[in-house]
View 1 (cartoon, rainbow, N blue to C red):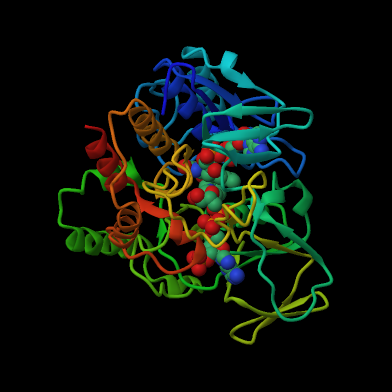
View 2: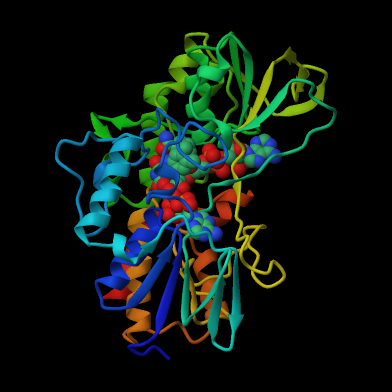
Length: 422
Ligand SMILES: Cc1cc2nc3c(=O)[nH]c(=O)nc-3n(C[C@H](O)[C@H](O)[C@H](O)COP(=O)(O)OP(=O)(O)OC[C@H]3O[C@@H](n4cnc5c(N)ncnc54)[C@H](O)[C@@H]3O)c2cc1C
Ligand SMILES: NC(=O)c1ccc[n+]([C@@H]2O[C@H](COP(=O)([O-])OP(=O)(O)OC[C@H]3O[C@@H](n4cnc5c(N)ncnc54)[C@H](OP(=O)(O)O)[C@@H]3O)[C@@H](O)[C@H]2O)c1
């Protein structure tokens, strides 16, 4: 059980790891955070070189600043509605400085192995090993590319969105972007500014949510409609989108095969505009490759220099024994996507995909960890049932693809965590 000598380790000082560190250290816990990079910020540290997981040079967040803040640290007034990547990185650094967190972080220190040992965790680094009583995982889940396979071979260049940093490389090239999520749509738009030809292949139709509705960031607008019963609210939302955008089929896109908010929201005001300007050509899913050509499911064929898969990420914990802890199939058995059923001294932060921003939820998960360690909050007695109930009673029935096994509604999940914390 927790005592004043208990040692806590956090793996990762991205937006999730730093809020875990803040909540634990300001509550007097003995905590050390290990970060393999030489700075905090995780995905929000932009680097030109590929390999390091980062946002794109032009990334602006897709949730508004109002809904993308830690609970006790607001963004500066002069930040726009949708801050840029560099503004967010400066916000994260200010948070770390405000709560004097740097002294608890060991930079350029990669955890290579984490092994359970007699109610403790042995954490291995290149040259040494240290024992901790509790382990918190915040290594992120947007860094290990998920790359689909299709019949045939493509002789051009195959890439993943993980490698996309800016559009310079794509100048005068013929590019096919695959996917319908935020990476695919952002990248298709950026590439089309300089490429010879840009197409986007989607395996289904999506509802594309513009960044602003009635002059408000779309999540701010949405938050003002939460009082409306869900069925009517969703109907009105679809109606509003139809009013602004018309039919997706009129853009050459597929009709969505699901209701609005049954997929992780693709928030993009430019894709439809670029399609209608002839800069991006929508295509169906890929059927097969042959030399430099791609055949799509409707039988059309086109040639490309580059196929870039923006097909998401696999969940990976390279430091765990895969036979013991493995969420690669996205079957998360954690209570509140945080507490492990077998190891009561193992917690995860940020291992979920809200319809909204991740780190305000990481903050609440971390507050719950503090209560758990302080014995002020207890796990449900039947954890397995609680996890089952939680994951089978989401307010939206998300479509059944791997990424949606982590999906939660932002407002609903925040409310649930706040209820448990109160
Ligand atoms: C292009 C792009 C845009 C995005 N936009 C949004 C958005 O608008 N809103 C949103 O909510 N999310 C967005 N995301 C998702 C993004 O993952 C989250 O915003 C956020 O970065 C998650 O924070 P995290 O701390 O959980 O993970 P990460 O940011 O991935 O941080 C994990 C940290 O752990 C460190 N680490 C990993 N393994 C080890 C190890 N073995 N030892 C030591 N350190 C380790 C890493 O170096 C990293 O610093 C975006 C992602 C991408 C790729
Ligand atoms: N501007 C921003 O702030 C920004 C930019 C980029 C990314 N992000 C965030 O980063 C995270 C990752 O986004 P992401 O877009 O990289 O990944 P993602 O959300 O997982 O989307 C992956 C896309 O690829 C499709 N796909 C998966 N497997 C496929 C296959 N075998 N064949 C064809 N298509 C396939 C998915 O289809 P299904 O719909 O069928 O699953 C989905 O359209 C998300 O949280 C996202 O919001 C934010």
